[in-house]
Image 1 (cartoon, rainbow, N blue to C red):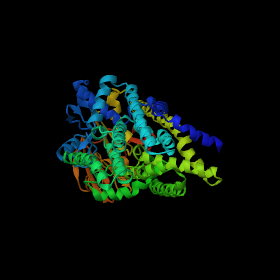
Image 2 (image 1 turned 135 degrees about the horizontal axis):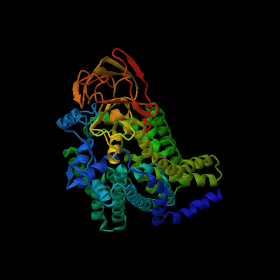
Image 3 (image 1 turned 120 degrees about the horizontal axis):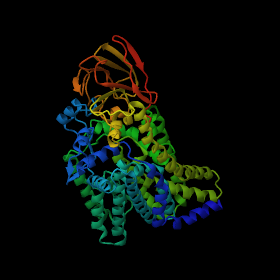
Image 4 (image 1 turned 180 degrees about the vertical axis):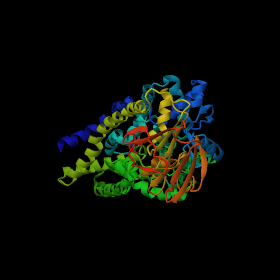
Length: 604
């Protein structure tokens, strides 16, 4: 007990911002082993094309999954589907978009500053990922400095403890290591510095803080939607923690509120946002779907911020959604009860800060409920969680010191989950994901040898995994391994299938389940109400696709017809089975075969 109190007493000197920046760099250093992952592959190729670094032949062979209209001369690498129905149908017919993607699918995000940072990185470092990752580490250290300053300023003895917990938070590793998600760190760090400037204006009378905070908030919103998290904390501060009368608080909040509303209006009017997907749901365009999903996602996200089980487990296995939500609700209620019990033992400064930091963290869940609950979404939420958990830890230590032994279990739980485990995650997860590039290399070599697939069409009959169904040709293009002209997927459903052969030129896939929109890959690009409907027939590269047999999750039958018998067609037919991509021995006409589902490279 004495050792724990001594350790807590040393935290104020250990959590000085400069030291915390160094600790953040050391903790995140394993992410330097990562290369370009998933969406990174698209962004590298899109920016290189804009920079004129690709030959005409290379540019022509890029799989068109991303739209890159320029923003002030900078390619917007965060527009993947722009909602243009005619363009989507043309690209789908050419085999350059998955056939089940909704005609009006919109996955487009306004992030000009983050796009510019991609342009700078590729100009300086090219395709060497180390420089890109060092850049991310610098932004991570900036975020930790901002969070440390904020927590130490806003809290009393809990401040250094909360800063340490936020530093260690392993939910942040993917936002640091996945370059495509760096926009979240950039946006939130700029926003938190803006919040600090606002606090200095409101509490210290620093007049330059008011305009500087607005400038930093505006920069944060150009980096990404996580800038909203900082604005939400500002609103929570003015509502629950700021000095002055209500009219003074309203006057201080008004400029930031107007900035946020102008950003939202511009965002919607310019066609940015998400619609037509079950993974990304825009609350303005699809309010009913959003609120229904939010009821499920909120407790999972809170559990991810507070507990040892990340929300990714529910994404990987839908059967775990219920247990993950129940665990999140239980942890949230337990934390609320614990804070109530230790409240009287906290300093006045701690209680004052907690009154706005904890609601701010809870309200910061609102923007990120638009997508699947994952640890990388907990950057802003983690601030409130760190403050609450730090208060629980300090209060429990005091109660234990007063002889209440039951609080020892609480201390062990908080320290084990939020101090002992996180460094292991920071080390282990990047090292695990660093093997992905090697695994893809091995898979590509085993599947195609050294063969150059340029000019060929490949059909993967079933694949519910994005790494296989979407990103594999991008990887081949980036590594100059002879990517095929089209990479087609017959069914993305996370289910067993029955493959039959009604005619020599036709394959038929029957989903053993509720429909093709089952699993993240399928749901990312559409749903039963937005994608192709039963009875539709359309071209898709060398295929003519007909869907039928409506189910609750979309059509359950897909027919894939070519212009000649499959045996003489140049189309290469593959199947993902038992961890391998291999040629499929087609059944004879009139016969069928079972295709059991198996997880892909990233477990989906």
